[in-house]
Amino acid sequence: MKKESRNYRLIVLSFLLVSLCMIALLFYIDLTQKSEIIQNRSVQGYRILDASLYHEAEDPDAPIGIKREYVLNLGNLDEGDNCFAFYQVHHYIQIFLNEELVYSQMPGNRHAVSKSTGCGWVMIPLFSQDSGKQIRVILTPAYEAVRDRETVFLVGSRHSIIAGSVKHDVDGFVLSILAIGAGVIFIGVSLFWMFRKKHDNSLFYLGVFSVFLGFWKLTDIRSITLLIRGHDLLLSYASLVMMTLLPVPFILFLEKQIEKKRFRFLNLVCIVSVFVCGVQTALQFTGKMDLRESLLATHCMIALTVIAVIVSVVGELLRKPASRKSRITCICFLLCVTAAVLDLVLYYINDNSAGMLNTIAVFLLYIVTMGVMTISELSYEANVDIGTGLFNRSRCREIVMDETVLDEQTCLIMFDLNQLKKVNDTLGHEAGDELIFRFSDILRQNMPARAFLGRYGGDEFIAVLKQCDESMAEKILGDIAEAVNEYNSAEGRVQLYYAAGYALSAEYPDCSMRFLLEKADERMYLDKKGYYDRLNG
Image (cartoon, rainbow, N blue to C red; front, side, top):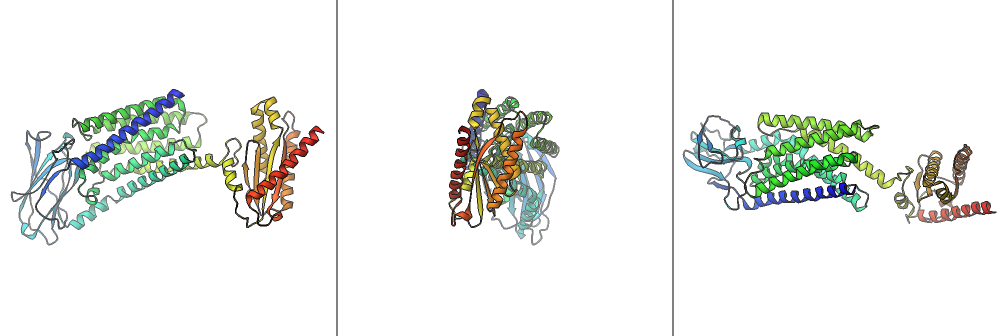
């Protein structure tokens, strides 16, 4: 167990280090490697047109040795045709209007660690005098993977193309924001429980995974570059970085949901994933290979993670008896796997990730389901005593330590088991725990449903009842006494004895809950003293 714990901490620290390095890479690229853009026209607007006539030529100076040249005729421009636009994916760009260079986008040479200029929209303003002119577009792919990427050219109103692009991506925006929002909430709740020292970190890792998933999709949406101008390279790398980091927090979350004997297998996958992330980061920083070029390695790690998790989840499902949470986890995860595989297949078929929403939609459902269940469990663990199912000492103290003057009739009853130490010493702590559990069950069965019932200490219990007078309190205590006698009459059982005392707010005008606790405690100890006096008398 200690070895597994050390390995777990090592994985978390390594992942944190790699994550910081990759985030540092993002800012380094954004701050030091700006694309060199030459544009001698001011932007005024834009609308839609496309063309596909081009020829491919060899270029020994190009990253992969080729470039594409498109020759387009603008024809007669309408009054609203004020922009020529297209979306480029990791290409160098040169645009000529009647052989005049009007736009150029190339990677910056200063501190360059990337071959790419990123992905984003290119917009060239058009004027009425451009009607009938010829546009020549030279696109040079930065990577072999984008060599055959189709490019659609647009001419028209700037407003309409922005509106159309954003409208097309609205589903992606909504899902991304929901994933990020859910992640932030889970991280916040996790830190709150961590502060209260009642947290196993699982919700934190789920929150981190959700944030990474949301930012991956958000930065992958085409129209994001229309809303955040001048950071195409940063957004492109942010998407790749988020995708690369996704497997580790997901596995760390899942490890908390399954049997510990599967940790070693999942830890190994975590170690491999962190190692791959570190290698990818080093290759990017040294300029040896861009993250986009090592995308296959990222996809392989995601596939390996899926396989590892399937093995663990199915093993958990087959474990007898499977818990309700285990079954829900398995069903949700199998849906996630189906969606992820479908999107991955579509990516390689369509050669782009545009419109791939299956993964984030289903994972968002999984994240919210697991998050709500985990929050519910944390809340339960923080307020409920595991041994009895009653409210625990912490929750009891929140109720009874209140100094506020009571504004309605209240009764507080305190119970304490007698001779529990003798039972523990002679019959063992298991017998003592059994008595505590049986007594708590008797209390639960004989208290009104609206009553607050908690385990205040090792063998101390309290009950708080609203709108309770002396006759009701006496009846409840009589029912409990009868149930205890019935329990003790069964053959072979360890005898159960207890002391009780109660206090009513009607006895003490303007009293607080804490004052009632003190009075009930005094009367309970008088009852306990009477029991031991009779026992020794």
